[in-house]
Image 1 (cartoon, rainbow, N blue to C red):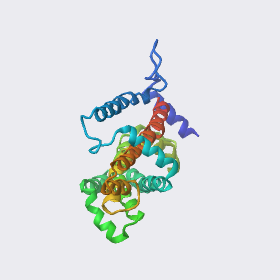
Image 2: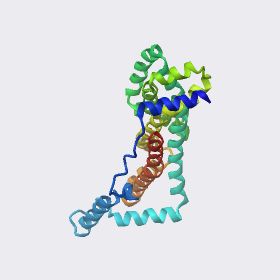
Image 3: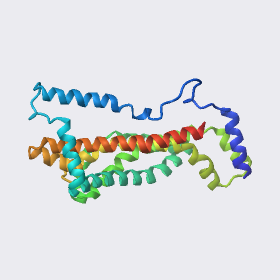
Image 4: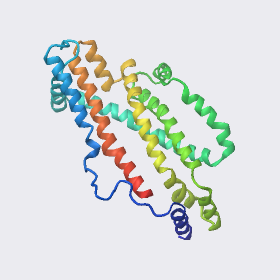
Length: 279
């Protein structure tokens, strides 16, 4: 299509040809450099283990990481309730992000394209976004009960704001020249959205989803602990109440493992793909 072809020329003419920033002459980027954090993490665990082994801190206060990892492995292999609780928490977070993205993305595009709408509505959204999230929890529990519905709705509300603001900023940063090309070639509205706006804001959408995911862990855990909704947060709280700190820390470690794997294997790869595509 003429519109898409000329828009591509405008983009390349504006930015010029770029050379990959992560390739330098005479230097090879390590393949697994994104996993180098394991080295300092291993050092922390080693110091933690030795501190307990030499009796500087009582094992009754905090369990050694070797015991925590052992309990975590046993539960992953033999305890279906533990796995189901982890999956429930992930489902609450995932569904919350999905619903928030479906709601926030078109609204952010609409707001970013219209200055008067942006001036009128964005300050109100900022006010609602600044409210303490956990303060909504009693109302959601009252309306929806102690169920996954309350957790998913809470996750949706929390995830909406970072996705909205990042996508809105992406729309506002689209050069006006691109819209001028679309006007000159009488591009259909569907083409403007699918070939111009959505590709332009996709990096910001990924950033917003990543921010929302980081926020949601603490919110969903707080909901599961306070409202006693089944999930990994409920397991951690129950284990502490029963005096089983090792089991509680196993749940805590499970959260960390999931967070790292999703960050490295999903979000980082998406951002790298988007960056290479823009280059």
